[in-house]
Length: 350
Image (tube, rainbow, N blue to C red; front, side):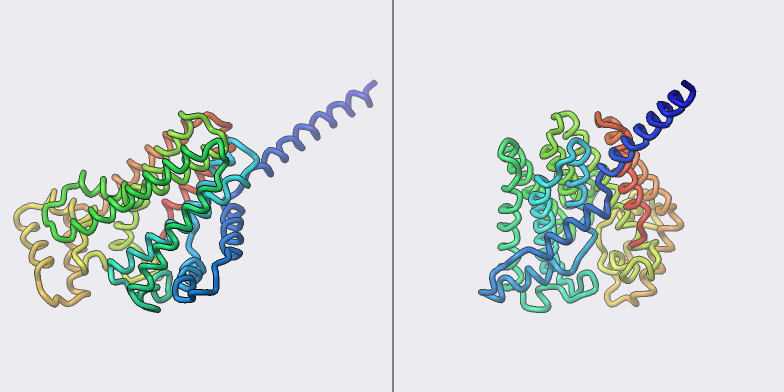
């Protein structure tokens, strides 16, 4: 009898452990999601001709990147379903679309480098890069349209609205270059449109493919919006306070081109007359020494406590993101993957 009871105890323990293992291994991890996306992207086939249309697309997609948006789509799907295959093609579409926006952004910004390589418009020319970008946008829709038929209209409507909003955000960003009175609410709305909505779309799209209910899909969208805002504010922060060796590019680029960032707008908001005049002087000096200008503006930021103001704003949006994620109605263990990934993104130094 004792032997039989011990056997039952052992069997129960083994069964529970095995069940937990199945549950754990059934949860997609971030690196697994990124590997799936990278493998699919490397296997994408584009025609050989016309070469100057398709070669820039292959080039841009081969430059890599963090694959944040498609990874989020797969992870969001996996919150509600073990079957993530149906989310892969839409996720690829999100990544193709994201890279299309970068290709066109580089033309508008006259950028020379992207991810340590020549930008497409520098390697070829503006007209080639514009047309290749147009083809990428169309191709993105082709991938997204392979979402499950039952969710197709909702997903295409979401993606189309997001695509329009990204364009709106880019236009606001360009408009701000010619304005000296940009407010913080205007800036936050610009980065919401330019950066956050695509992250939010990725999460909601994945959730819809996974058959999440409307409330949970909306909560994941809210998670993405707030994380996207925190993520972009972190970009502003790192451009001034990042470690140049870890940041991957020179510090102070935004300062040198007088870019309207959260830090600059906040500085004007809290500056006294003396600091405001000093800041305006550095923004208007023609041919200022780059390192001298970066140091001077950074010193003004330090004096006005802008570093802490930016950090507090980042944390505010990050906490809002976590609150939305915690409200999603699925097992806490499954949400840990997304929560840990968000934490890693907010601790990045590049």
